[in-house]
Length: 91
Image (cartoon, rainbow, N blue to C red; front, side, top):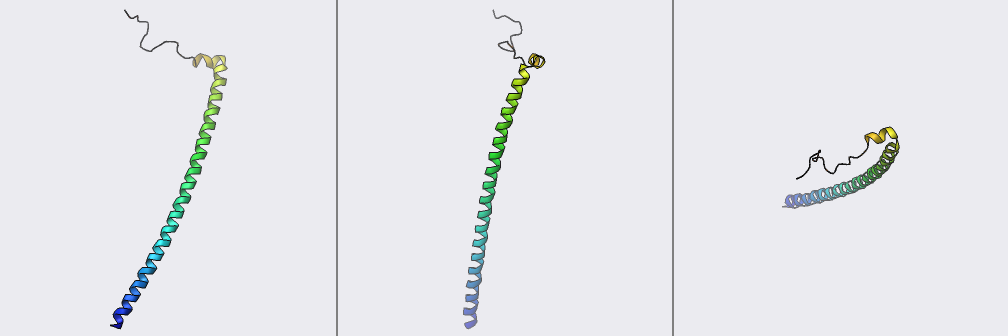
């Protein structure tokens, strides 16, 4: 009978220790996931800022190129109202 009580006690101790270890590993995993999420947020903000900066510089470059006489010929917008009205008249 004493062996059964000892085995039961050892079983409870081992299971308790395993649960404590699993809990600690879960806490570490959650901490690491939070750190990854923070890094992803920072990366996303950096990409957004770079994208806005690139858009501003591209618009500035397009403005400078459209002022150029040679490039303004290629960058003119069509004055037609629609692409399907190629010289036809509606009757």
